[in-house]
Image 1 (cartoon, rainbow, N blue to C red):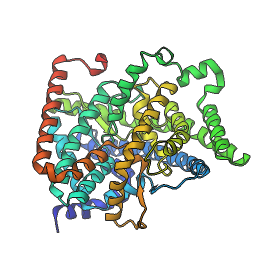
Image 2 (cartoon, rainbow, N blue to C red):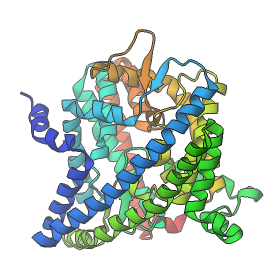
Image 3 (cartoon, rainbow, N blue to C red):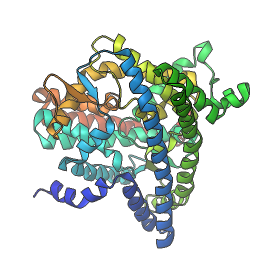
Image 4 (cartoon, helix red, strand yellow):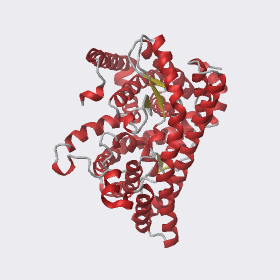
Length: 459
């Protein structure tokens, strides 16, 4: 039995139990390591798990309520596509069913520790669950090349890049803008959309109509009174979506209540997470500073804690019809988004803060992302379908399965690009690329350290 299989035997019960058990174990252990004491460590582990449990329950509730409306809209448009969007959760299960996933976890942790103690990152990633994305990228390369070493080497490079990008987002103050001091949003290369949004925001700053963050939830509430309150805003969006989907009036009212519920309760659950994270974050900061010469440390967590933001939820619902229309008007589109439509809020999290939570600016940015994702799907969908088939998914001839979440996950595209060109690049080519990544990021890191000022002050 290989090492990865042994690790899988040990870790699979924890992984199969889902992210909550992992969150409790990881944060309780971290609490013990940073000397919170056994009782406080377990108590904080429980409270963080309670907060995340609340977040996940309400997010699942939100997705479950929006999904029928999204499906009705898609069916209303009609059309036949080669690939079916089966959702990110299916691909997460494909990832964790492979022994390679557990090797990816070990590699990611090792790279993180090396980078911390060589002062190449300020993020200590505790969001182990979301390494499923790097695992899918690994499985894409393995499926295209049959070379496990190349696939795992690529995962090491991904871990390096992901930590650098997460640092960038944190130093810009975008995680803090959501009210989470000392945290880093870690969700693979998805964080790189924050960089995209940052530079789109610079362009929008030069356009008179979008130069100021005007259409924020606060502005709407101030300008239109109760219409800007989260519950009322959720109700209005639910009303419009229900009418567009052709629902009977009772279902429209229930959808209004569901979206209003999500907009009101999600920030409360995020507050519980933050309250419990404060002592762990402070203790971890002191511990790391004492062991790393005063180094600033961000705790890498699931960005799910920020999805309760009103702008994020509003744009999520508004993007449902937009993405469906794109599937029908963009040449070569291979599928209509379905299962992942509501779940794309995990991407919109990264772009709302750079746009200062302005709904119009954020919507413009997400529309651009939707256009990119639709074109990228042409390449990525066949690779994801290959992974699904290799992991046992039954696929009818002439069709395929995909995940719209995956069309916006940069590592899937670049892993497929490398795997498709493996014969010409080989291991040597990947080593050269990895070396170039290390060199470039090291130069940027040295430049940042020399400035001795947070990146957020240099926008």
